[in-house]
Length: 216
Image 1: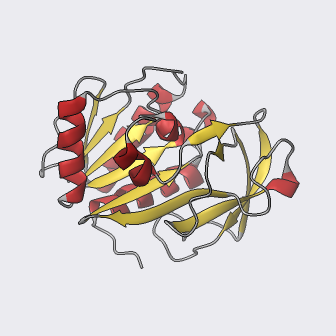
Image 2 (image 1 turned 30 degrees about the vertical axis):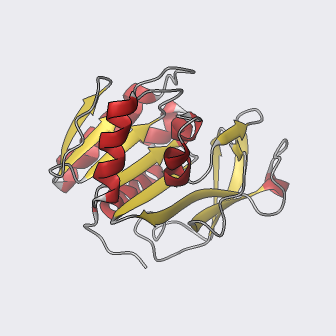
């Protein structure tokens, strides 16, 4: 299985990107898939099981690359968006549908409670009903619930500065054409990628997107 990690930035650049790449490479080494990391114009081919947008930002694909990526996913490819992948390609409606929701704002990095809504999905089955951790907590321009399958939500009563209210999805997935899309707002800090529980979430996301692990 081949996994492409794409981390090009045209806006804010996260210091955690190298840690994220290394974590996914190590997951591949342990779990038997090959990882290619690039910030160049990616080649989206059927031979790639999943493409991870790792804290990309801004407009990172030109028109031809957009068309190729859309064809790749709609034709059966997998997409995993991590953190600032929601801060990417704001003027491309198809990408907005793919990622599920675009980033709006965030409060200061702090500890919060993450509520597991699906305890059977390969990305969240290992998590407790409530997972307490520290990260940068994204608000989104629109609530994606109803358009996506929500896997985790944020308990806004557990931290300060949340702006979405009682229903705050933070991790979700959905089919896209013949492909599969997954997004999580987690992953701002370098420390996240050393966390075994977060690494397991990424592994489950890749397996889901690649179609190698079934999910309802």
